[in-house]
Amino acid sequence: MSGYSKEYEIFYFQVDQFGEASVITILDFLEDCAIAHSEAVGLGIESLMELRTCWVLNRWRLEMERYPRLGEKVTIETLNTGFERFYGERMFTIRDSQGNIIGKAGSLWIYLNIDRRRPTRIPLHFAAQYGVPERYEGKETFEDLPEITDIHSEIRFHVRRSDIDTNGHVNNTRYVEWMLEGISEESLKDYRLHRLEVIYKKETPYGTDILSQGQGAKGAGLQYLHRILDQSGERELACGRTVWTKR
Image (cartoon, rainbow, N blue to C red; front, side):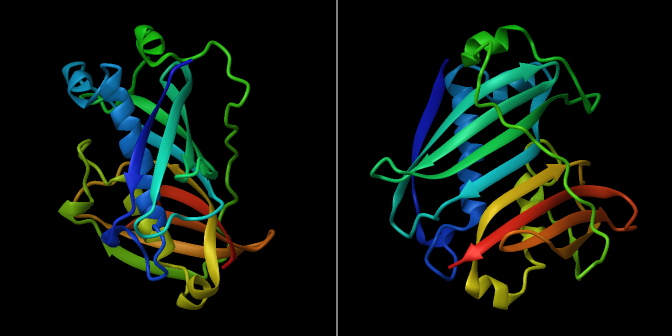
């Protein structure tokens, strides 16, 4: 079983109004660590481009006990925990400079044929290069999210060039940004995002408009359901759930 780790420092442009790393910063770190791991085992972006393939994020589940502050250093540890047909699972652990675990994340990725824009089988040799275990007891279990039934907030956004990633569609963190825009300022002052779940369903191209909708949800603490729709309001592009705890 072979994993990978990388250290990150929290800079001024990566913190929020409370001096803590934003959830977008954390997600950027996780994705960067996954890419660095792939590069380290010889399966980086250029190698995949030669195969006309790429990895597309399907699901995130992030849980933070606390967010690192300005100037703090954290280490991200990542591990591929399994491949199945065209799905790959990856886990992350976030540690502070004393080695304490301050966050964990699980993710599910789809191996995609770029030209056909369809999932394709993961080559058998990938498992050996990543050191994927035959069995991993701590694998993530992903659940479906409840549907929004009563819209509490709705905001329209226009997809800009800066929202597009190397795969030619909206970067996964942009959906999270759009979802969080529906949270009130009063809630953000009193609560901190503890748990985030996101399911990505459809690609979003440059130049389109989207709708970000939110609804308060029942459960422990403060909870919200989120969804991103295309401009017609008929096609769901992503959905999510956020759980917040008192600061």
